[in-house]
Length: 315
Picture 1: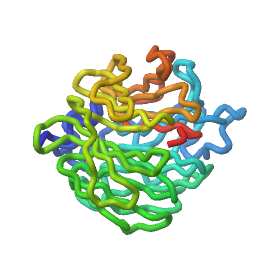
Picture 2 (picture 1 turned 30 degrees about the vertical axis):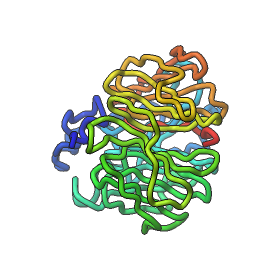
Picture 3 (picture 1 turned 180 degrees about the horizontal axis):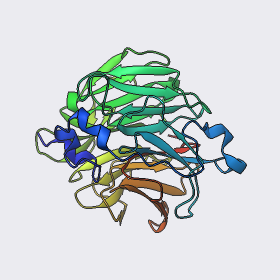
Picture 4 (picture 1 turned 180 degrees about the vertical axis):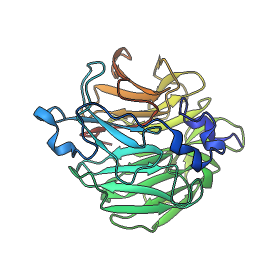
C-alpha cells in the first residue's frame, strides 16, 4: 500500500502522515494576517469583502483562512476559523454556509479519534465535533445533508446523518480513499488509490448502496474528486500535475490542463466558471471552461491543504 503521506504535498512536515510526532506541531509557524482577528466571523468581513468566499485549510497555521472569491491574485483575507482546529486537512462548505473542517491531529496526537469540527454560518466556534476513526482526507455534504468522510487510513468512507456523531453507515474501499462527492442523482463517487494495481480509480455507489461499481477511468495518483452539472468527473492527477475531466462513461479525459503543483484538493464555484486547486502551499485559480490560470492565492498561507468555495457548486 502506498504511504498516505503522498496526499498532501508541501506541508510543514514532509513526512507528516508517515509519522510526524504530535509534539512537533508546537514548533510550526503561527503567522497571523495583519488586521484580521483570529475570531472574526466570516459573516462580518470588512466592507462586505467576503460575500462569496474561498476557504483554505492551512495545515501549518492550524486554521482556515477565508478570502473573497474572485479571479484576482492574492486577495487580502477577510476572516479565519481557529477554534478547535489542529492540523486541518480538508474543508467543505455546504449550501447553508456551514463549514466542515477535518483535522489530522486529535486529543491523542496522531492517534484516534480525529476531530471533524462543524461551524454554523457566520460562527467561529464549532457547534458539533465528530470524532472520526481516521483522519478525514476529504469531506462532502450531499442530499439530506449527509456528511461523507474519506478515511484513507481506514480504507473506508463514513456517512453521518445531520447532527450525528456516529456513522449511519461505513463503506469499505479496496484501497485508500482520498475524495468523495455526489452527483445530481445523489450517487456517491469515491476516488481512491487501489490496493490491487497502485493506480487511482473512482468507484460509484448508488444511493444507499454498500457495494459500488468502478468507473472505466484511471489516473496515476488521484486526489479529490468532484462532479459538475454535466456529471463530468473532475479529478486531479497528482503524479502528473494535471486536472483531468472525464465525460460520463469515458475512459480518457475530454479535457485536461497542467497545474504548477500537485492538485490535491479542488473546488468549483457555484456557477462552475472557476476551479480552485491547492498544491505546495498555495491556491491556483483556473477558468473552468478553458483551463487557463486566471489567479492565485499565496499571501497569508503557509501550507494550504483543503479548499472550498461558498456558495458551493451545485453538486
